[in-house]
Length: 359
Ligand code: F6P
View (cartoon, rainbow, N blue to C red):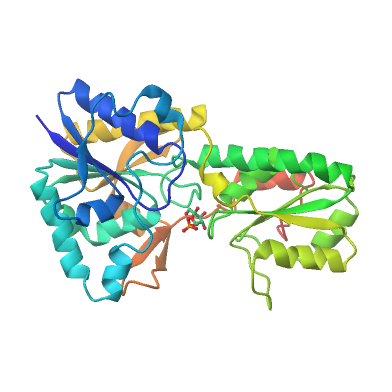
């Protein structure tokens, strides 16, 4: 009988509970025991490790569509890889995590994380040397290489779209524009998808340079005198600092375009999990369980061309763009961005949405 651990790390998103529940269901069918690590690496660092054995009555089907993580993702300010590195305690931190896995007598660990957590797990793989490590990608940012989708992205697109839908009505009443700032870090995928879905007139993403005069001209010539201008949080404007939506808003105001800013913030990470995210979470959980059964380790589940499979973490670490972590010496995170060949960019452009200086 295997004993498997499961933990959620990094920022939360919708779909985590479905994934935890499906892992628990599939593990039970195989006669395995499942231990949830509470608070991510904070809980694994604790002595004794903060873990609970998952039983049917703890996580019911009704709870699994709710956002957040039933196991929690950790406390702000707790010791983690970055703070441990800053205090010269990274070795001790890693040793403690390794010891906790042994104390829990785990055969395998399912780590549900973003590109930061998965990159860290690979970079500090000595922690997991005595267990099978299987990672499942989750993030609203869709910035993880080698997978077409991440758990939480679809729900975030839905949340952001609905947020814009509401604004559109008040925008229309007052003949004015809303500059909506999306999350996504340096990846514009969330802004691009929700911007198209919501009928935004312009979508600015970090991957594509834009011209403020061209944006202003586009809005002045728009067929409506109201609407949404979607701005991804990762865009920059030379000579300006502060929130990107504010700087775009000021430029529009100076050009005589009446507008307001709106910040959906963490509501993009919440909301009931969409059917698409639930199906993705279920498929990824299934692939993770099969990987454990097949004795795979140091792998990440990925969805490619609609099918879930595993890829090695070594492959993950060299894919995408390697970005230095400012807080951990020699640490690199593997990042993905909107591909400039993404057909959605052409779709947006062809539909008259300003997406920057693409052509
Ligand atoms: O990576 C997920 C994300 O929601 C980003 O889109 C955003 O920039 C960041 O996390 C916000 O982090 P925090 O929850 O620490 O404010």
